[in-house]
Image (tube, rainbow, N blue to C red):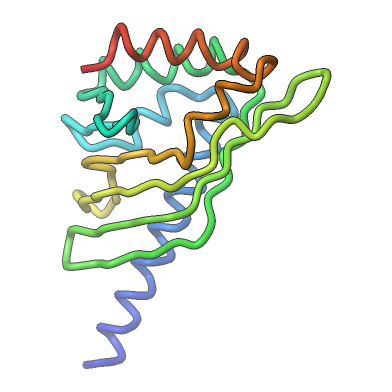
Length: 163
């Protein structure tokens, strides 16, 4: 019996890591519909900002966010490593390190370093994000003049459109 429980835990852990690889690839390949589909109904994407957070809740708001991200920041690559997963039945907590790169003709920028914190739920055999928070190590990237010119339009849009 213990073997089956261990196998189920391992299967779910690998499914969650694969799920987050697909999540990153959907944003980086401009597949907004598949990115939104990574979230549970009523799911939340939150960007930590100066001790508070800017949230996008529900499919319509998530779609607006990712479409704006794709439009304003094409050429991104999201790299997630150091996955920590705690599974309890059909719920899971996930944390990983995040590095985001932005390719431009003059150079490749690191536009974010930090970590994700996520709550997931499994429904109909599929893991979905209930709540995901992105924590940036520093807002200082906006101080780099060239990078700021690329990031500021998205930062301004989030401030105007998030809750």
